[in-house]
Image 1 (cartoon, chains in turn brown, purple):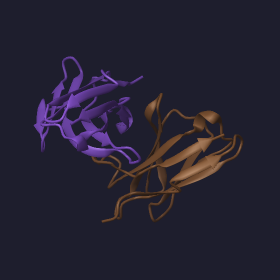
Image 2: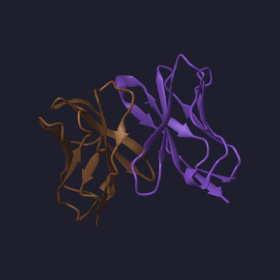
Image 3: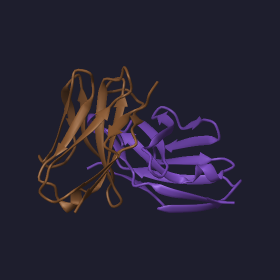
Image 4: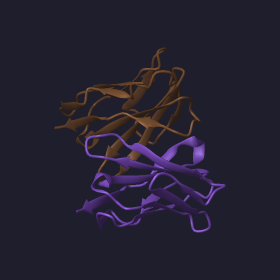
Length: 113
Length: 111
């Protein structure tokens, strides 16, 4: 069974631009969560989607948004990029929202210059 | 708010030694705890988990201990190997079923 895939793996953007990251969960998994990982803050929860609906949201500004498609693939979007948005963005999938085990993808490394 | 903290940012051990990585959490309502391993360039990988109705759980070369009284969690790795070198995170499931992660301990294993 293929794991969680994220595209692109690396991305360089400039301040003020917007970016879209993509995540394909493990086949059969319907819940997708997004996390931001930075050296200073560690792993922070962004949001969780299940059956195309956002079920949970972390404490991030409205510039961060996401969506999930009917095939469970998910995208997250960051608008008006700031230098502080530079981070590793991780996607994790699970069979359902309350499922204990989440499987992480390799992440997308976003650098904002 | 909820937070999870690790006691040491870096732990250096010799190959063959046992390693102990510690974690403290703040939310007494947390009912589920997980340890993840993250190698360079990869996403976190599940190692072992434990529920709040247990105080110890063993896996292959790993043991997780949970002390709910002092809200403390530890991961013990037996006979540490160079391949165990990575960053280790603990995570707890608390309010709204969200996972809250600690900041991570980097384990360095020298031959």
